[in-house]
Every structure is written in C-alpha cells, then in structure tokens.
Image (tube, rainbow, N blue to C red):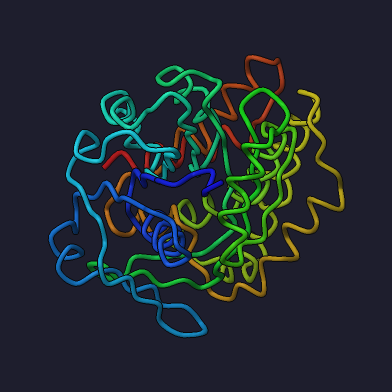
Length: 308
C-alpha cells in the first residue's frame, strides 16, 4: 500500500503554504504549488526555508498558475489568507477527485463552513497552526518557531482515520500534531491568543507582543479580551479553562519582540483578516445573546485602521 495521500496541492503559497508545502516535499510527498506572486522566480531558483538549525532548499518546485493545470489531487491544503477566499469557488473544484480531502489552515472562524459550501462538508478538515513564518523575499521563507504545532480535526464530526493519516504527514517532519474530535472548540481556544495580541498590535500603533506586555495600560487590555472570548465559548458549550487562558499569556514573553501575522500584513499594506478573527466571533456572540463590548470596540478600531 502506498502513501494515503500521494499528491498534495498547496493553495496559497505565501509564507505558511511555502513552508509547510516545502517541508512536505522534502519529506517525500508529491506537492504541487498554486503560486502567482513568485511563480517564475521559484520555478527557476526553488524555495529556501531558513530555520534556526540551517537552510533547507527545495531545488525543483512544481509551481502552477491555475488549479486546472494542477488537476485532481488526493489532498488540498488551503493556506490562503481569508481575505482571498472569494477565489476558492473557482479554485477548488478542479483539484477534486472522488475522495479528495480539503484541509484549511486558515485563521479565525467560519472557514471550514465556507469551504464546505463549495466542496461538501464530508471532505473538509481544519487545522490550527502554532508556528511563526515570514516571507523575506521571492522564494525565501524564514521560520522562527518551526516546524511548530498543528491542532487538527474535521468539520462537525469526530476525527476519522483520514485525519490521523493527514496528521502523520506533518508529524513526519517534526510538527507536534494534536488530532481532536471537536474542531470548533479548538478554533475558539486559538482565538484566546489571536484576538488580543494580533488586534492590539495593530490598534495600539504597530507594536510587538513584547511592547504590548511591557506597556501596563496596554497589557491591562489583554486579559479582559481573553475573558470575553472564553465566556462566549463556554456559553456555546466549548471548554476554555482558567489555566488555559493563563497559559496563553505565559507563552508570549519567550517570543520576544514578535510581530503577529496580522501586524505584518498591516505594515506591508496588505489586507488584514479582520472579519475572520474579530468580526465573526463578535457576530456569533451577538447571535447567541452574549455581550462582548471590548471585542466590539477593538473590531471597530481595526475596521477603521484597515479601511485604507
């Protein structure tokens, strides 16, 4: 019996997609990259993945301009920013065979449901990435906390053997994999860190996580935002404990002067995933009758600041 996923398409070959796609390819998988921005450069020069333990190079990279050129594969990994999701109804169908699985590694809430509306819910897996990667130049990705960790599950159902098989692909090159039966709960848990640190980094003047925690007035905003997310999640039946909340604060100082991904996008003039990370949780809370006044203010600030 061969690999359970003998062909993989990466949709969204920015920093995250290039890094994980590159590592999967270096581990022996047949990986095909849907790439527009640096396609010709990468075709000629390959990918360079710069990590603390050295540089890994993928010399021959199968890059494509369209999903139709890639054709049906066994596994699709979606690493697009959610701001580009409008392209998915056109992009995903040509990649589907009868049993193709679609894994989204996107931030925020609502991504699995949107993809399910295109490909069918039975295909959809979701993963939450705990990793820091940035794109430093054409074909060059720098990893700060790599290969990182991924929490993975399936949309609306317990994890199946298929999910464990996908997880094994990533675990094969060192990713700390956690397969869960409640993907929605894991999504809310990740918001505990993303909402305050990504949001305040932008809203308080383009500052790092070290500056957030090192400025008493701003640091005082972190925990109340986390508490609002936890209260809403608990109201919806998802478990977010006090020790978990505190762990999300405790893990931040060792990152140093870290720029969250949303801040990196903001400073580069790219669209920020405002709706997926801040807007959708607020709308879910409002629909459930839960008040989130601090998140509402932060969301309004971010909409105003990113309107450019």
